[in-house]
Image (cartoon, rainbow, N blue to C red; front, side, top):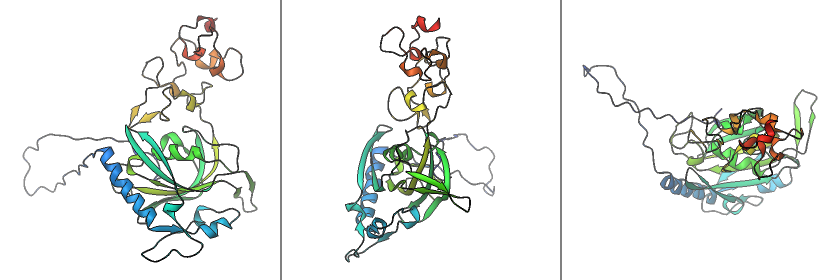
Length: 310
């Protein structure tokens, strides 16, 4: 899937080639220059804003549709003429979300077409069921899923973790006669994404390096993740509250006992020899609300909480 995260592995081998003949059939490796993130963000933002100023969408049709889908969203480029009735320039309709990732301030532009009528919104580390279409600013489609697919948000490019928690899941669903599931009143939108929150220097199928991209998406359902099964939802194991478990293939600073295993994958978060799930003293299934010594640190993060070992 095109929205899955590509692991950044830069292998630059500086080894002299010995006894290489001029007529050898060799191909030099392609080396991608790693650009400054702040400078690239400025260029990407300019490209996205220009796109938003020169394209409109079928706002009137979507407003009269009881249950619009990504397939109903039509974005059209216009020149110097006026925008046809029943359409809206994207720049006049999008909202801007500003955030910091990899020590760089980024802007995401979101066309919120439907908030979603469900009571749930995913956290950044949850599993989501979605339909989507990914496309370049040239409108070339590089990936899509017309039937629902499930993704662990922690495995995707960063923008999905930043946008989907701002939407709600479906209000209701029912089984169709043909075996499909019909979803009603789900989160629906379009996000316009700088390369720094997408693939950045990594090229992938249909997406060159340093390319801003866009996604139409439907947020259908979500499931709360507990990657290590320790009773603490993964999103609560983000100790530094930066909304990331791994940034640029480096583990975030979420390792309480500093044993090299981050809390979301560590069954004994504080390294006291007692499994986190067994530090749920009141047996309510939630270790986060048990603080035996009353020091403000729950037992599962408190290696000095001897009472929890009784």
